[in-house]
Amino acid sequence: MGIDGRQSSVPGASGLVGRRNQGQSTVIRFENVGLRYGMGPEILRDISFQVPQGSFQFLSGPSGAGKTTLLRLLFLSLKPTRGLITVFGKDRARVSPRELPLLRRRMGVVFQDFRLLDHMTTYENVALPLRVRGRDESSYRGDVRELLKWVGLGDRMNALPPVLSGGEKQRAAIARALIEQPEILLADEPTGNVDPPLARRLLRLFLELNRLGTAVVIATHDLGLMEQVDARRMILAGGRLEIHD
Image (cartoon, rainbow, N blue to C red; front, top):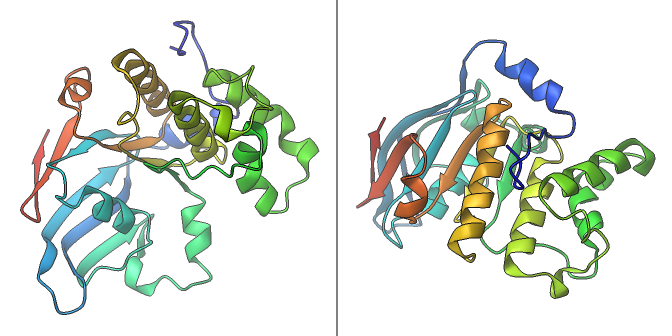
């Protein structure tokens, strides 16, 4: 369902559905992964899990447990100190700098601090990943507009981020993460700065995206949010990960 309660679909969603129908496989796999900075103690220890294609899971744990660090490993912006990370069937340790951007294009990331550019409109922020790739605007203009309507920002396309509310910025960040139709979406505390009704609306967006075939990992400390969905919970504490299916 859409955020307004009506049936909705993501622009270009047929590609997402097609991927899901290919049969479930593993998008990302961690095997005995450890991470430390310099000579300090390990922040993450013996982390093992997999993210199946089309799956939905929450990553939770107390503040400072390392949820954001684990997301950075998932997004390939950090390398583990030890262990094996496999992303789309490729060994992270063997991914060349040239291949890295290509793998990241298959992922969508919603950052906790939004990372919108204040001098660009909502439309321009969402379209930026496609513009950077050299796409002609005529080839994506319709998809960007449709996606902004899907997240409830159809009337805020030309607004600049400084005049957007926290919830509107969050939805713009989600739209930007989705514009390249990612196979996996990573969201870092996406409901941390919004009220409960808006948090539920955002959750419905993630569930709709998942229904269309994208794997979703939401890092959150919001127990109320997690109780609304029967989904796997990965709990990070003391540098170790417990999984509750």
